[in-house]
Length: 364
Image 1 (cartoon, rainbow, N blue to C red):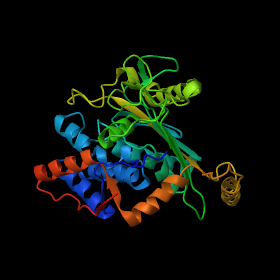
Image 2: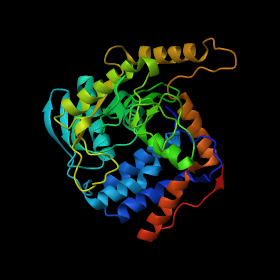
Image 3: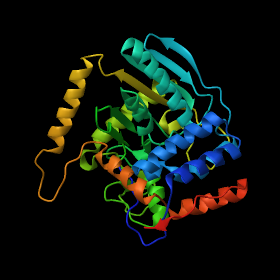
Image 4: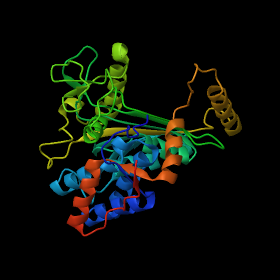
């Protein structure tokens, strides 16, 4: 899934990766977050901004700081494993930033997978964790197959429904590939993520067809009128709704946390009460089912066949992650784009905490 900013006449600036990362971390620390929370939240946001998933990148910084200051998030949480059975464990996040909980959970899943071949960790008392792909990728970068999912507050109608039901409920898988970037699938089970609506609202562009509905369940292209999202699949939206339900079961039901219909809205109006969200991560050792050499050869053969398969005229086939890795390489050279609303938010945060916002490199 690639959320790169579409072409627009409004002012978008680009900034250097290292400056942006340092600024985000410094803002969290200045706001009173402990070092672990600041590092994890920054790491997750930078994953989004580096790979072109801008809706879940650094544009979330101001929101995260606000909910920390209001009390929704614990700035200094005690994140710990509270239950374990074989290769399955439960982590209590103590209302931490969701990224800290998810990275900690994945680290523990990897430890269990090393011993048992597989490790699964349910996460309770957590919060918005940003890009699900960040946590699946953490497993792949360590040499394991990774999976991550969560539920969120209702904003997606059911197939043929006219009311909010599921959250955007993402699913992400990442697979290590010897000699190449990981195979990386990171998808919302809605037609688009809600943060993309906010991004498009900031950029002043229309939504794609069949992705959002107004308050009556009627399709709309206006990000201002979008009151709910459509499930993935358009006329076959029952598939997206089913996948959203799968994320709901693993995240909420299995962890005893709130269903999407019970979670307080991400955007308020109340930001003092923890949202009691759930999430789930898993790691699988690549040689648990076959030997390492066979697995590596199979993944490379699969990707070779995929990327060299016959295409329609003027088109190009890509494996999950290909678009994101290409965008990441471009951003190393060109800088990371920041939308106008986020530019303004950075200026306010810098003034509040006595910091210098990242310098603007050039427009796009």
